[in-house]
Length: 112
Length: 112
Image 1: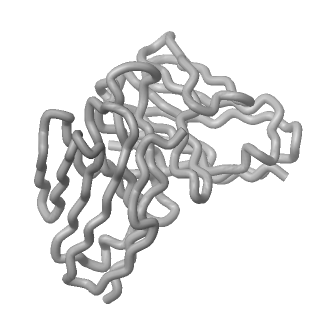
Image 2: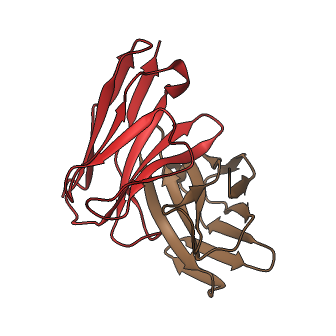
């Protein structure tokens, strides 16, 4: 079982560039999430999707967009990257809302 | 905003000793969860305790929850070098945004 798969693992962008982080899960989970992790800040929720076709803002949504392409896939897009978006990004999924989360291995993003 | 706050921020003990870390939170919760993160990896779910439970065990892990004090503790007994990791508490509230709110974590080092 692959679980939650994120791509890419590493990315370096210049300020103003755009990119999409991909996430897919093979556990037939309804809920999917994007978090960012910064040193000393813990994890903060960017966006989530409670089911296919729905997305909602989390704690820190500014500068990001998401797409729940189907039940398996949930992508995160940075339209115009800023240095403040330098972080490690984690995708997660869960079978039930607010229950056990399964995390991907993360994407380390640097914006110069 | 951070819901959970772990204490201490860092803990170093000898292999074989017990490790205790604490989590305090601010608002009423539906459940509280503990996760482990090894360096450079995603988070792994350890244990979930619901608001109507006071104690839960899983292998060498023991979690307590005191809703009157809005606090939880995670005890790891007979620690091993492989327990070296960061540990995060995460809370699920009954309403509002979906997803879990994470604390900043406790970094645990087990000295061989």
